[in-house]
Length: 110
Image 1: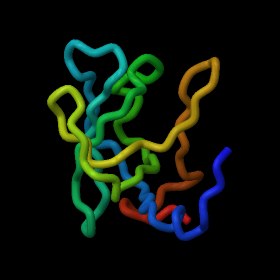
Image 2: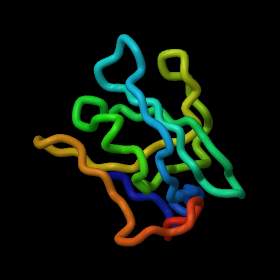
Image 3: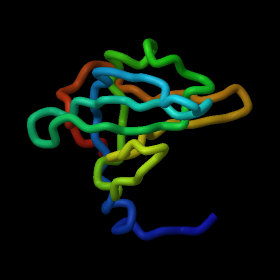
Image 4: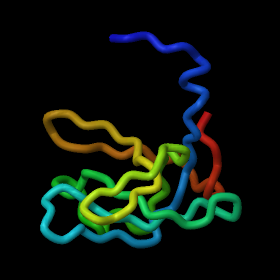
């Protein structure tokens, strides 16, 4: 495992957002396109995540989840992804993180 300095970690802007809409990207088995509300400061963003094998779009709507929001945009199957979902995976699939209570959209993860 390569060590990084605290300053490297501090460059990540991780925020909580609420999933407003989610849909599978056509002709893919893994990709979901989600519309995320990050509040007034960051607005609404589209983020593509490779979790469709384990999560149904309708199960995500309304959930608050953590995202890296200062990652450079990337085109995935013709859709610009404007961030990255944080999740864990093991032999049983993907597990999502969510706050123990609702917080304002755009709240920074510390």
